[in-house]
Image 1 (cartoon, helix red, strand yellow):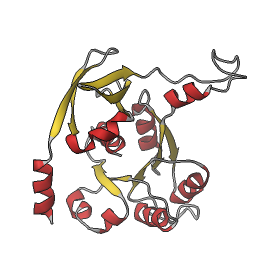
Image 2: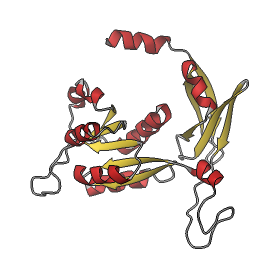
Image 3: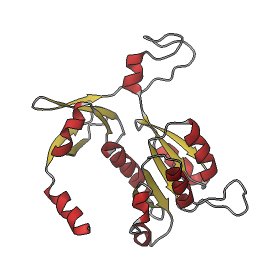
Image 4: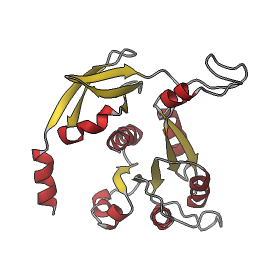
Length: 229
């Protein structure tokens, strides 16, 4: 099975797209699978790999249109232009619509690191410390991606009695089809990630928190999953 997937990946044709960020002048390249180009006609949002500035990319005749997306405004107090009583117009809502990431992490410092790192990315981050609270959030919020720590259970806290795997099983059981990224401090991460059960739980990747750059790795993985859908 691995050989088939590897062969398919190697033979899939991709077209390069060069982008220069107007905010920080960084140059980066996207490789877009030819088979998915039709999806890009509707547009897809990506972020600069250096500063996180969002760009809307659409397929056009002979190439792609790349447009920097304005930073979302906060509608509070005095109504913003083009709005009524501080409520965004339909057009502005479409432009500023962002996807929501739910972070489930019981370590306060780790939550703060992710929250600080994700500032400027074109997404909305909701953070919570337990699987139980995450289920309550899913019941009232539209979530596009889960970032779940593998070990959440706290025997001393009756409100935190499920680990990350338990949470993902509940999410699947309740009928949510949400991609997930799993974080863990366990060193032998390959032993975990190779288990086939994660495919059924919609896990798209693992991030090991043991290295000093794990938050940067997480940002890249989140952007990759958001881009591919």
